[in-house]
Length: 325
Image 1 (cartoon, rainbow, N blue to C red):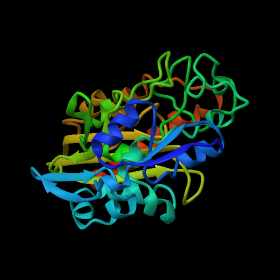
Image 2: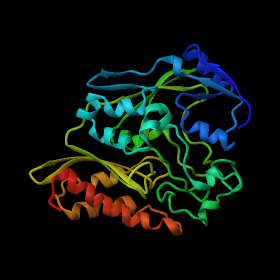
Image 3: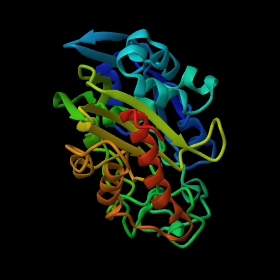
């Protein structure tokens, strides 16, 4: 780890000024410190934003305002989250270990970096880590990599479980920066890799995430299903956050977001539309899967994710619609 200066933020404007000047924010540090130890990120200045106090969960406009510094464990256990947004609670509890959830923050979880093996290996070519160097994952061991939203420059998958559930819930991110405050649909916070995989978000220089805004809870059943190599502390091979309403045996509303298969938390409105009006049953799942996976681009080891995701959609819809397996 290279030497760095440590600064404790005295306020939001202080954090914004330091960030605009090139400093790196730190709160829980559960991802950043690993990247610093491996010298993948080598910030000259770290700005500790824990003093900002954005660590409360409060009701707002029928939904919830979740402060950027709310710990993942606290968010998963909050009574209103468990009651109104069980998909979010389940997603959080499926990610990382209890110790990490006690430390990791809401904003930090959203901004965590990919776990692509080539991103973490400084001897490998990685356009996300070193723009223009190439992407060894394209022809390498890419079992964990994405099949949706990828490009010829990067096939890294986004690692967050929490973000997948929040995208399904139509969450927004509240940010403040030199140009004032704004809200961004969480889905639009992330950039696709295209030819600049190193540019991962739509945040402007100096902008700081202050909260996540959850809208009023949606109607219907909610679930989060995650397929991984071991039962705990493993990133998703494929996951789905689902919210579905059924009336008289037909699907009337649906929101599906996916993890482990996309370059960002993945939601396809056309796949959801394919479910509307469909009778509960496997034909509905097939219709949604056909639309979702039409754009899949597989690379060798990760080709199994297409079939795995299709089965996951079937399993999720059986649970969400009350269909007998």
